[in-house]
Length: 69
Image (cartoon, rainbow, N blue to C red; front, side, top):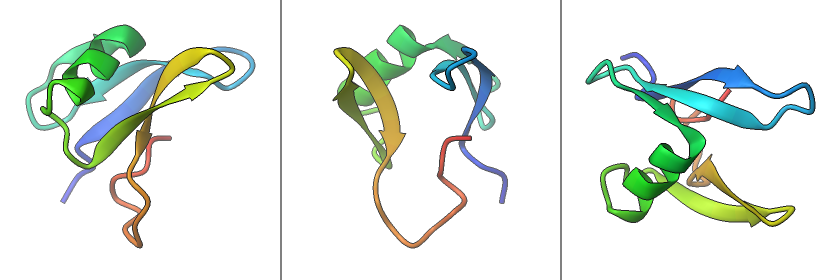
């Protein structure tokens, strides 16, 4: 099974900025993905504030298929 969400763009410092939902084909900015997570559309992900920026992260578990990279 393919990953649900993949990172499609990141900054030179490694912050993920663009994402693709591989099931629906939609592309999202970080802000859009954060909003979708908060609205409950992606239950295997949550939002952390890292260096003052809301950042999408996968929920900790033993699966590697849902990790953002």
